[in-house]
Image 1 (cartoon, rainbow, N blue to C red):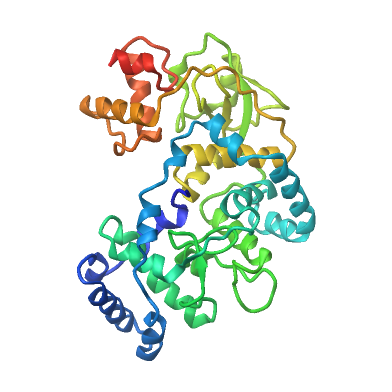
Image 2: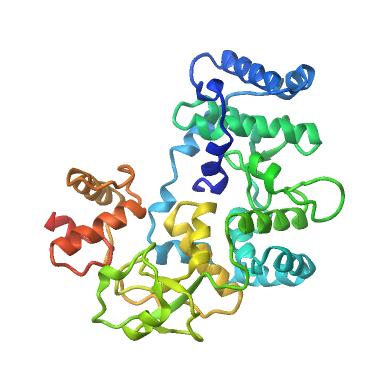
Length: 389
């Protein structure tokens, strides 16, 4: 059910050499190619043989990769499914239980505890559900598959390096279908780059150690540009007569400009920072100002609805009230969304694929067509827009 995390999208940077482009064909031959690449990179041949000895193709990984329909749900529905009172209570209990670790993270990396608690909750239910896919098999399966081999092949070699450190067992290490490991679900390459031995035992074990996992997550976010001491989103109320075309991710304005247009912080005072107005379900639904730290969320996960929910949940864990859901106009079904995307693509818009998911490209295209048709340009697709097109 998960969308690919940040690590999957940064793996491109690890890819190098002509072998990295190989995929498909005979699977044993593919494994032999990986072994040749590993030895050429300086790894001991006996260690390489031992690492790949148990590697197998896993068809269940490919089925999971093709079936991520949960991200078709709108924000209100999606967030209500993921956020429960039980998760809030357990989050606050974990904040207290691991208070010393969170204090270290805030001091070293500037990442607020609610942010990591929300990821911890959504990725693995605070470590309880970390995935039961064999990680090596998941990585070699996705590297062999020709859909995105450049993302996954480097991760196989990163797992080999973790194996050499004593922090990965190719036969028994398990995690998510996309090869992510541990309580906050990081790919091997990111563990190598951002792994922190939070409990001081000499190893980075994100499956077993909450301190390792949380410290590593904090370091990762800091490296992605998290700005210490700054908010990420804030719920607001918006006036009816607002120019809706000004809304949307990536359209920051000084917060004082939003205030001058009648946008009001619901709880507290707006931060004196540039902010974009986010309307997850259009002008009649919830409304948030998104500050610079919000952009970092998209480096962790590129699903808009996941990012919006994780960012909001982080504020709830730190005391924000339940958002005002409003009365959003009915949205489109998955099939209707695909039809809309086809119509938008035919008009020259880049919607990022006909997948039925309201991603950034589809939202921008919807907003452009709403403006062209003289409709409120709030980027929320409706049957009225579909019919108008």
